[in-house]
Every structure is written in C-alpha cells, then in structure tokens.
Amino acid sequence: MDWEESNKEETDVDENVEPELAGEEAEPGEELETAAEREAREKREEAEREAKKKKRRLIPAFVTLMAGAAVSITMRILHYEMLTMLIVLLCVLSGFYFVGRILQIMLDRFEVQIHEAQMEEGEVIEKEPS
Image (cartoon, rainbow, N blue to C red; front, side, top):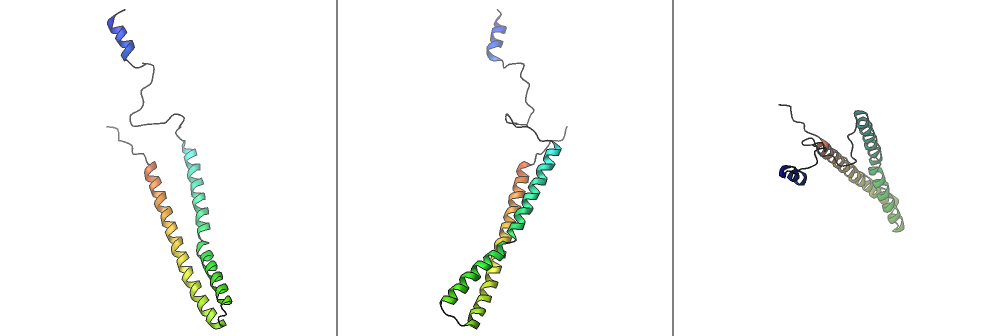
C-alpha cells in the first residue's frame, strides 16, 4: 500500500457526498415549499389576520359595557339620584370607549410590526450572478 493511498483514507472526506450549495443551510427534514404551498400559506395567514381583526373590533364595546355595568351597579347600591347617575354613566361610557379604542389601535399596530418583522426575517436576498 502506498503512503498517499493510506493518507487519503485517513484524512479525506467521503467523495460520494454532494457538496452543499453555498449560503443555503437546510435542516434535515426541512423541504422548500412550492409556489402553490406558499400561496396557500399566505392565504391562510391573511384569513387568520382578518379573523383577529374582526375579534379586535369588539374590544371597545366590551370595555365600555363592562365599565358601564360596574359603575351603574355601584351607583345603584350607593343610592345616587337618577339624573346624577345618568350623567356619570354617560361620562364613564364615553371615557372607556376611547380607552378601548386606544387599546384596539395599539394591538393593530403591534400586529403590523410583528408581521413586518416576520416578513423581513423570511426574506431571502439573492446575489446577482456575476
């Protein structure tokens, strides 16, 4: 046996293994998605965002009604006069509607920021062939 042959067996990597593409790191079991799969995934994500948006529209109304219920029950127990109770209730309802609306706007902005971050993270920048 020749020195080069014995050294080759000890030091070289298996020649049958295909070299990986530069810059592409795919984990085992992870497959690239086709255009149809990507389009279906994007449609599904858009439908989920729309469903969340519809649910979020209920936030101001829910906050307003909960605050109104708590205030009206408290004022009824404390024996407020009817006119005073209605004025206070109107102020509380309008105030908590705006609080709920601000909460809704904040959640919408957070979702947009998260979506943009996910899109940036998922982007692949391809080099132009030279």
